[in-house]
Image 1: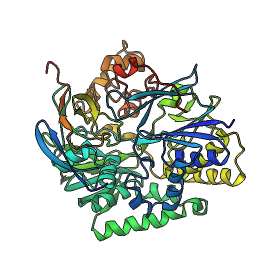
Image 2 (image 1 turned 135 degrees about the horizontal axis):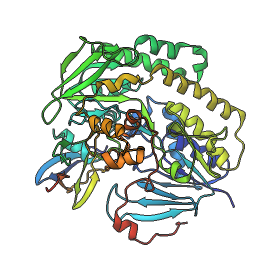
Image 3 (image 1 turned 180 degrees about the vertical axis):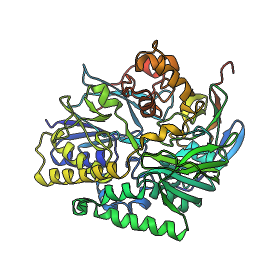
Image 4 (image 1 turned 90 degrees about the vertical axis):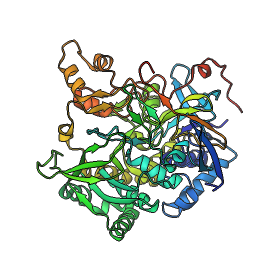
Length: 449
Length: 88
């Protein structure tokens, strides 16, 4: 009887895990919340996208979902993991719909490849309609051919801003500028040390050149050391204030500039989505799931791959997924797979060094700047609560200010609140995804075979 | 995307989209950028676009709290905007 490997997430890491678990002889069940595989990287309309992004590999891996030993469950939300019973709780059906089917799986090995979402630092006005994360702009432009605005400013940190700008231009938006907050010196130093070690990512150089050409053709300025420090408008964004920032992201006074725009998209890197790993009891390091050479977490039978172990892009994620798939299926991965994975980590290290987050971003905030978007907790309230001896720790702080207690459960404000209040981010959410009470009360159907 | 047109209503007003678009995509393409109010009454629409922030929730065919960015729009969907305003 072959091992049953359950893989959560069908992005680059999950799909590579599928391929290698199948090759090692396992029976595989793959779950993803979306209707089609690919994750955030291979955004929908994959036929069109595949041509640009390592297409053949994605196409090949996508076909594996039809393999006789593979079950593919699209529209599947894993809302909890029961450690005691080693049971994966799944809802299948329309996204956020009522009356979804409740199912459970009891795997021999579980591979978590749940990915990451954008990190956006708060700034005055970031809650206004018309301010989007870079990922939202990308998802809408790439997946739906909808531009988030007519005149858009793209800002933040990291190379992801470039494909976002390109997608916006393709969708018909005017991009007024792309701003990287880190100074050129930081970015250059981060990327250019020992360039030969980036051989695994040779394709990236060509990709960057293409983005540069696209921006130049559309006369879109790309500036280093400049950040969005405020968005203004009554019920939606009308203008955005940028400023020159130093290496620590403190504003250089007198360098402010105002752009008239109807949309802003901002991305300051990514944060992992580790809820299920936390539910499984896996140890984290700085918010990321700790894994060993075989992508094993600290919990027996639970593996992690991709952005939840560290932000490294699609190539790194796939390399980790391949190793996880082999090991979870009970095989020892070959040296080539391990080498590819280790080489890919170089890219992740570079990314972190070249595009750090400057600690002085908090000085962009004002007393009344909203930090927790759901509960509208302001910077002033957080500062007062932190100074209050009756608020001795993160738990009391949360209850006192309601930061992180709204519908997103701290997914958006968590890193900012913990940085502002000097605490550590808490990732424990017993319910990893929302479930309706009626669905919770409904009888669970057994594992379908 | 198949390119097939679909029709949905939002608070009674008819909007046209394309099969394969999310409810958020249809709303944004129609020029609507906010459709929810927070506890303080402030307007909100899409922020993260991938289901993490819950800023874009609305009511679809009488089911509340559906994330507009995650739900594919279906022909005939009746959408209502939502409020979290206190005493609303």
